[in-house]
Image (cartoon, rainbow, N blue to C red; front, side, top):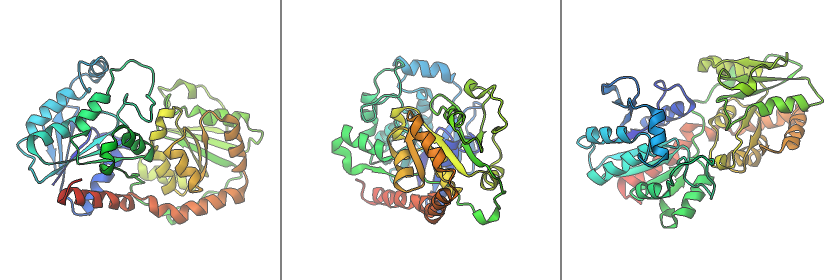
Length: 388
C-alpha cells in the first residue's frame, strides 16, 4: 500500500499541480500499486472518503498560518493539519506500507510523512515537485522577504527518508551538495505530460500569421508580459500573441488594446487541446527568478505533448536545458531581451519552425508520464524490498 500525501489533487483543486498529482496516482495504480491519497479538506470539518481519496479537515486561515510560519511559530502553514492527520493515520498505516510525501514547496507533507515513519517504522519516499520554499537551492533563496531559516527543518525531516525524488536535476544537485551523505538516495525524475494526445484528430487552421501563446499562471514569477514587450519591439508584426488564463488580478496585461493580442480565459482541457493544435504555432514559457532554475514549468511538458516548438524566457537550469539541449526550440535568459527578439524573428522562417516541430513529434513519447513513471516504479520496488 502507498499512502500518497498531497496538498492538492485534481479535480478538488483545478490547478496544474493538482493535475500532475492525479496523473502520478493514476500512473502508479496502472502499474499495480494500491494507493490511498490523503489531502486537506479545505471546505468543511468532516473527514471525507471517496473511493481512494481521504480528505482531512484543514480550515485554518491560510494567510495567518503562513505569517506564523514566516516568523517561526509554525514550522509550516499546514502544522495544525499535520497534527490532526497524524492522529488519524497512525493506527491505519502498517509497517510494510510506503508513505509517498509530495511537496509543491510546503514542508507539511514531508513533516507528516517523517513523523508517521518515526511512529510506525514504515518506508518514506519524499517527492519534491518544487524545492522547499525559503530553503537555499544552489545557494539561492526565493526572494528577500523575511522568513525564518528552513535549513534545520529541511534536514530534520529529510534525514528520515528512504528515498528523495526531485523533479529537476538542479534541485537534485542542490540537495546532494547540502547532504552529501545521502547522495545514493537522492534521485531525479521529470514528470512529463499526463495523457498523450492524438495530434491526427485535429487539423491546423491555415493562417498567414505566426501565432505564439502563453498558457497558465499570470504572476510576478512568470511575467508573461515579456511576450507582449517582445512583440512590440519586433519589426515584423505579422504575428499574433495569445494569453490563455486568468488576467483579472494581473494588472500588467490589462488595458492592452491591439488587434494582434488575444486574451482567452481557461478552457476545459479537451477544448484547450483542440484550440492549441488547431491555432497555435509556438508555446511561450517564462520564469523570471534565478531560484526557479530548479523548477520545470508544467506547461513545458504540455507544449511537448502538443508538438509545439517553444520560446523560453527562463533562468539557467532544467527548463532552459531541456528546450535547448533537445532542439525543442530556443530558450534564453529571461533578461536577455535582444536575444529573445532574435529568437522570435528566427521562428518566422517556416522551414526552421517545421524542423523543430518534427523533432518534437519524433521524440515526445519519451516525455509522457507513462514513460517517466517507470523509473519511479523501479525505485519504489527497491525501497519496498531493500531500502536505500
